[in-house]
Image 1 (cartoon, rainbow, N blue to C red):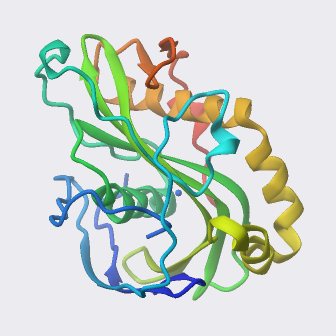
Image 2 (image 1 turned 90 degrees about the vertical axis):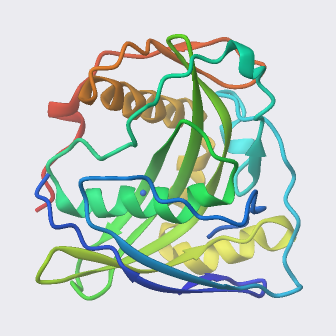
Length: 264
């Protein structure tokens, strides 16, 4: 169950189980149809949304590398790019390129759960900023962090950001015989209850959460690396990503072998 403590309750029956070996919040829904990208992974996610009238409206704004920490918990939708300039090339869906099944489940959950709240794009790429992981209980593994989803359209060799948002909170998973399964997600409220709900969810890790969300440079560095590794894993010719109204950001060298570490 994904809970917004202001009155939104989203019941989830989730069996996000991967058979291969190989990070909803306060959003404004852009459409009624939920499309799940084809993947080598096996996902079975049934979502039943029950929404209270106390839902807080979100402000739409553009995402930039210098304002990452300023728009936390908000939606962005900048899908006003002239379609005549966009190269019509089908991009492969994002798949976690590292070897850890745990993170593969986590990244897939973020895409499947968050991207349907925005207009369709060529590819949705998650960017989890993990603050702390509590693995003491295999039946309730807690991942605290600020979980971003970014949606992109391809224009030449540049991924243009069309929409996205951040969902700070805690994702709960459990270990199963088949791998891992997401059981629920707690999301920090926006508006006047932001700080109070963040302290309630993050508890002793609140200060670390504030520090992480204040470091926009680190967030952008992680974001760029995740994109670069996606490009390398799929042998794409993409060289940069771009937020609306900002200059393109050149992608770093891929580092799949060192960026993703083994989960003990």
